[in-house]
Image 1 (cartoon, rainbow, N blue to C red):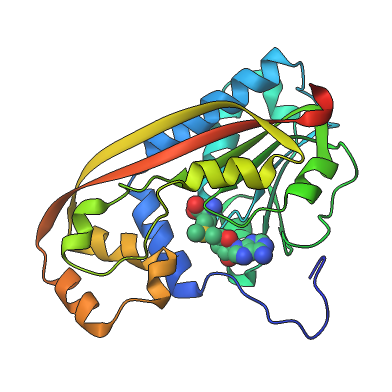
Image 2: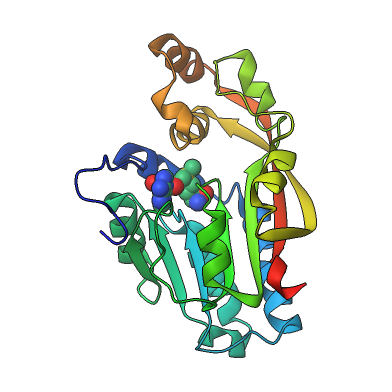
Length: 250
Ligand SMILES: C[S@@+](CC[C@H](N)C(=O)[O-])C[C@H]1O[C@@H](n2cnc3c(N)ncnc32)[C@H](O)[C@@H]1O
């Protein structure tokens, strides 16, 4: 594995989580989020003339590859953009295996985002970081001076309706502020977009939704039982897409 120290514990999502994520995402529930990401990437590439084979588009902590796959399709429709090579990185081997089987034209690597990234300085036009670990120093090293970092986080109200049924992990009130601060040495926030997705989910989707998140490791069997007993529920996904520019370019 790239960037991984021998003997260290390998983390990352388990197969069951990845399969749940694929089941849930394939049903299109988070399409508004994916569409908003694709729109921002396309606008930035065009505006800063970053389209071309020399600059990569990278998803760090890409999971089973859903967002990159949709980005590839979206850019493919816009002719010239297809020349930017796409890469997905994840620490979980199962994630990389699932992603590369599904998306043959995207390169997926097993790599630890907390260590040195397998890209040369300034070689990436766009870094995506969707509900995944961040490494400000390395993101700053590999990003092009006019490149863009897109970070997606859940807002505090994300799936709040579900909290009446099971104990989900808490989301900090000031998560976006903390994120800005943690990246402030290398990046300045350029824009922030809230995306809310109301959904009416039946049991199978509700279970997949919880199983695909870190709640998978924390739910009690009583929590799972309560969740599985809900026939259908209206829930709202609530995300923040934060766009950052590297400070060196300002
Ligand atoms: C909540 S999931 C999000 C996956 C994907 N971005 C999505 O939204 O579908 C977090 C992902 O980060 C990966 N991950 C966790 N720690 C990592 C690390 N140190 N380096 C790279 N990937 C990591 C996990 O294996 C998992 O696929």
